[in-house]
Image (cartoon, rainbow, N blue to C red; front, top):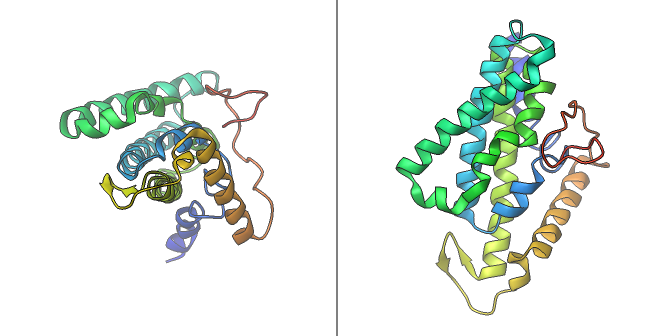
Length: 217
């Protein structure tokens, strides 16, 4: 019972308190690029969550075996292997999703959410706690990405899940400026619900692709 009580916060913190997109401000590139349609958002969410879950479990299980000097290359190798498996499965069984995600599917390898949880959490926690952390963070990422996609596709394209609903949409919401606008509004709402400013990044930055000046994105 006590173990469950300790693990529950690890599962729920990713929903809002430490939401990787709204509070830690990680994974912004796929969030902005993929949130133009609900189908693409769901595909990215499932793929990223699967990689996050299995990478957290694997790294937590091997954390005492991997030498500190090579842990980042080891993490990237593990994550890249998992992403390759996921990409092959997506290509084989849901090619439409693979086409919609394009280059952003293999780029899950350098997604700062995945690398951040590996270095900042799985590296120092057990397998079960790391699995709960991955599920919570994945759920938070999925919720934000899907909600953004619903708003942008519905209002910006007049459709939902590819089904046309009305004419004369606000087309700018499908474009990059619209993505930044919706994202900014969601961050503001997230901060309002938490009653304060954006949470300071607790994970160690690992100079992942797209980082500048030591700040993960």
